[in-house]
Image (tube, rainbow, N blue to C red):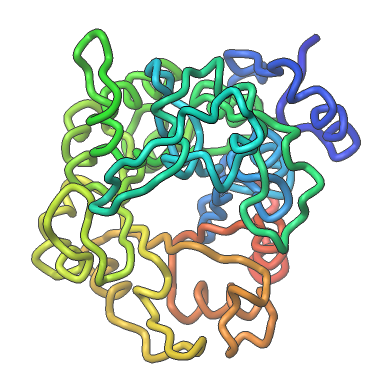
Length: 372
């Protein structure tokens, strides 16, 4: 049976029923080259943060497919590795919060303690499981206040499967893979050919045709941003691929995983000048751009202005519709938050858990030209 990835809602239920039992991924893309509606480039990018994970468990096939259906420009994923060196889509290096691994008694002896980003972490880790073993686990919703009905129904997917979902969309949809925890992965996983985690990711992307500088003909055909919190990884791959890269920025007090610098140092003019030749943009935590005090926004920093003065894009994270995440000044209205960040702060892309709401806001306020 041939299954295309951007299914209408009517068919999504069929995927839900079958997804856990067998793979539904066909490579390469089924769509004919040159027949797809192009990527929109006239307004800030709608980046589906781990897919439409406000609705489905994060980084699963239905989450990505739903995000495409809702209008995402890019589907975003964190890339990690299994014990046997297979690249997978999963946010945490451990499995505890977003899978049902604790229910699998056969894996009870796999619990470990590792140092991750300078802190000890105990749990079940992707690097202690083969892909075959991970495929027996079911993904679950991270937040208890979100829909729990799909818990355990969908498996972890591979980087190849994630790429297939984007390539088989009926319009051009970009990917936004993150080189996740590269220091930890390179410590724990060794590939037989002596290559590093970063080498394996780039090789996979090239295998499926991802190449070209930002806004080039090749890039517009298969759009991609490669992101990481580890600047050294982005510098390392700069000679391997000309695909655009984005440097992620965390809370200014946190140390980066690959240097002994805080993100306060990382956002200095000196560091932005250093990283500029290697990246097309930065992806800051939004509270780094506009600090928050007692759940209220304070005076914005000049980070966006300093990035834009260096011709760097700014793609902040993460926008979530729930009141738990909306600062009080937005009066429980996600549209007010989008309006603030797009029209006042002037960002170039937004990572959101609710792709549909951002798409609807942009269609209301900045509809695309008819030719797109």
